[in-house]
Image (cartoon, rainbow, N blue to C red; front, side, top):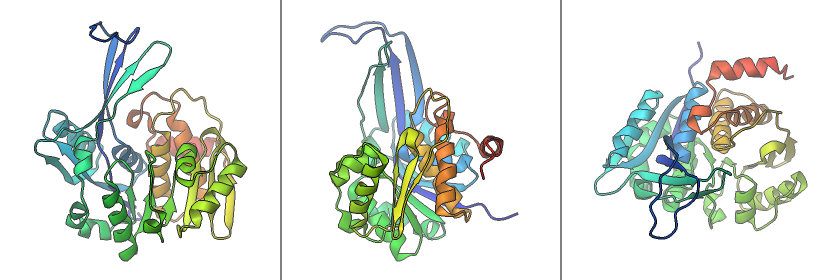
Length: 311
């Protein structure tokens, strides 16, 4: 049996706190909610879970708080088979949380408190150096401090480890510090915000990718939801179509794409083949409600892939 890919995720761990209510309260008013759901999230944790479910050996470098949520978040990762020796609790800081309030019409209001995610530092990357150097791929995101993201990209470059950066949520970034990055994978809105160009079509995405590549990044993949994704790089600017699915909840689809793409690529598949499979994996994640709990395991995914007679 071939060895499983080793994927290292340097990123966020959050708790999603969702309250369903008939209406939002007025200032100073207390009302009863209809239902409450507690879920495990954070873009880093979601991508780690997706990679693990796809068959990789996965470990995380992350931080949680010393509140009640911290141990539960670590336990959830461990239960999924993710190595957590570098997921540590930080004294006096809360675990990252996302309180979400949802009305019957689907309208929601979300607060994100980064908490312990904001304490992940370059020194924490160094502390995990031996594990990181033995990985097939390092995957950071933007829910941790930018200085740590830049450091992780530089670490991967120095040690010849493939690096996939997911710039979500989007904010100002110095592309010069990402020179030599292997894969930069934003969605349409993130690509728009970072490149300053509209992404309303595949042709728009091609122009946006060209601008991002101008900063020295090796490959750009812009995920386009129901339109699939665009794969761009030197001599490559190719649209990879999506698969038809009955979508009910797109939450976490981008994380499903990132985590699965990292695994398929590490297994030796070509970029385009990896992107095609990641398109399907991400699409399938939207057929269930939630993020991590909607992700397919490898057996279910392989059966779905085979049933579609992909050539």
